[in-house]
Image (cartoon, rainbow, N blue to C red; front, side):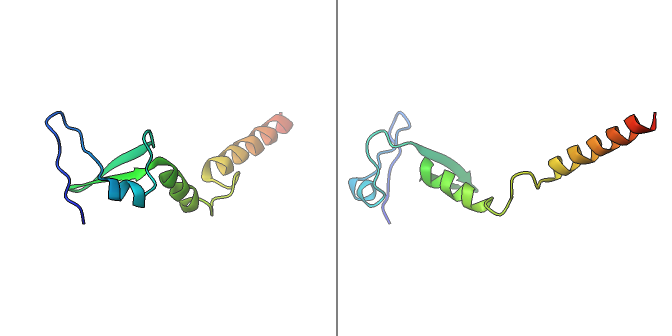
Length: 83
């Protein structure tokens, strides 16, 4: 565990030991989130990979919105052929 202080202008310096461990180079994009009283910083690419894994089971075209659109199209075809 490493203690980090917030500077007078609100900046936080990530110690070199953590930068090396996380492979953080100058300019590496980080995403900040708040969970309760915790501030979480994570690499943007890691956050994107985590989100992709979370939704990997959702197949394109199998969502509720797609089902609703398909249903509406079927109804429109039925109404068109009935008239």
